[in-house]
Length: 394
Image (cartoon, rainbow, N blue to C red):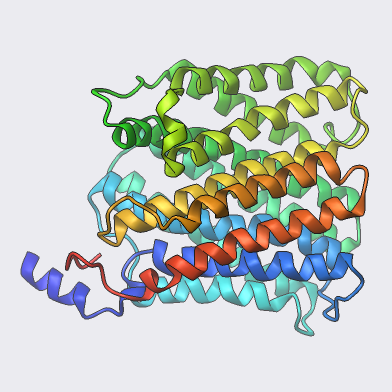
């Protein structure tokens, strides 16, 4: 039976054997194209006009287009390892990816808003089903929170699209910013599992830092609380009452980083990139603390620390390591990838520190982001459509 399964897997084109292949490739390519288009729009050179306008498109697509694609690729691959059950491959994976790709194109087609929403939400609902059915079949209660967060992301996407349909800026902000903190919740759960493990393996340590369940649950609860308050519209204006919540989340992220820290990480790009990206989670929460205290004027600076530095940084770091491991290659990225990491974090600094004073900060941030993902695609793209180098069917 195992031999038959292996032959069946090898008969599938490599691109469609596991979820990370199409979604990492498609998501990274979309990250490059979408931000290039946004940078062109900021410069006054955008020729395309998506439904709802460029700002609504940018808000939606960086989370539900780019971010959700990478989340899908990671989870649909990891769930096979976590549960021991076969994940999507072949035609079902092609169908799911086609739904995602259709959502990216639909913004630029002459469609009614209800059609765009139907296409977008089809993917947002199919993902928790594809992931959750294996989790529940394997009775893995510890992974149930991930299914919950995926379902809440779909709800936030529906709220965002409703705001686009109405032309309501506040609704769009509530949906996208709440979704961003839900992504932060996912990054906290998954980062708490993989960063200590990767650090141990990357430095050859005898053991990894033990997982702190109280830290994990506290950060998950804090991020979900922020997401709920944002979706309800209570986090769109400065409210000193929210200071303790954001300060607590920032401190807990900082405590986690302190527990994980090893001086040797700075010798290994695959490690310092993860730790540095995670640090932006603490920076974002502390930035929101300052905004609620009235000490910072623009909450978007904190939001972009979370979106560009944390989400973008963790995605790029995870893409480079996971792609090597799952294509049977040594965990040694090309030297240019260290420059990609540096460019992305430089882009974050430009967006968070410089953009508040000069439009050049926006342009530099867009350029750094695009160059970072261009370097990744230059060195990794072919891995996704070619077979594993070790002959494994994955």
